Image 1 (tube, helix red, strand yellow):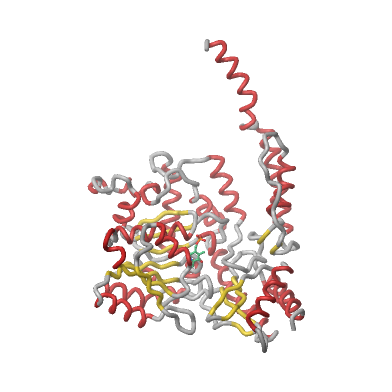
Image 2: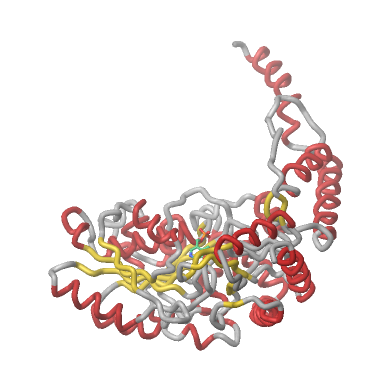
Length: 475
Ligand SMILES: *Cc1c(COP(=O)(O)O)cnc(C)c1O
């Protein structure tokens, strides 16, 4: 191809490829359209239901230019109006969070500017923001300044990073695997076993520690199990306690677990994915001992109400995290300098990644930390209010919860489980407010998980009205 032909082909292609870079007036038009859509979405949340059983359809990608407004109409119909409206305060199932607006704006800005947050040299500022969020988390959980950590996509990947560090610190490999023992509470989140399986520890022995009446790990049982396993020639190495279980929001006695793991020289991990940020509230005392953990995970997309896709992990032993994630850590040990720890990619399986730091850093700076704490305090009171209201209707409720998750069931005289299940189905079909169920102590129960920042007293009143109405259809 001669230069003239090349230039004419480039000019031809550019006519099409330039569509990817709209000019300022086109950008303003797109922004206006997106702003209108998102404003209407948020303003409409109070009136909309919390859940719809409608299925999605027709989202096929076709090779033609379409209007943003038309695509947003499709998005409204197929995404916004199907399933759980997770941005709504009416999401009281699983573990909600909501997604604060300023975090969405941060994501937008992060995506437009698109800095490479994996490597310090590539974007010192973006890496510094990621690291500052980790530093802030260290101070929240009283972790030492020389602990390391990273922002991940969520609790599951955070657990993977923490357990990999534990595995590499204790050199759990080859013939040691089937002799190695992990201790978990009976209500452990399934991402824990999943992470162990993914990192090659499927064949370790898992001991499930029984729970007390408040669904907290029985530490005398834990201690006895570890003693016996050592006596039997096994290799105990990891205890995972939970600070806020998914089922019941219970916080294990962290300080006691810390003492036991110290005595037996095991790795002490805390899953604070859901409950962690309640350490900033009047429930602080429940978290005593969390600062003694070797690793902990916490999800800003739960207790800081960020949009889905941001978790965090903190680990004290930086060398083991580097061993797992820094490709040349073995022969670069002498170079374990500050610079190395400033690059998020050295502490995580990810290299090129979403610049998640901004969506945490910017909202904390913009609003201050106080509103986040007030929101968490409010959730603690709302769960008490909800339980009182349910008891007035004749429901039985679980034990006084540690945090903002609880459960209830109706004491039907016959077939209680199937009738409570029917009640759950009616609640889902109604959809005013979304709740989810579980099985606790062999009983079918309906869970209450109050964490979304938009959940208010009015939301609970609406939930109570809906539950009362659904109950009347069964009795
Ligand atoms: C949500 C949750 C997880 C998993 O976190 P993801 O962010 O969903 O991957 C782990 N542990 C607990 C206690 C949780 O509530």
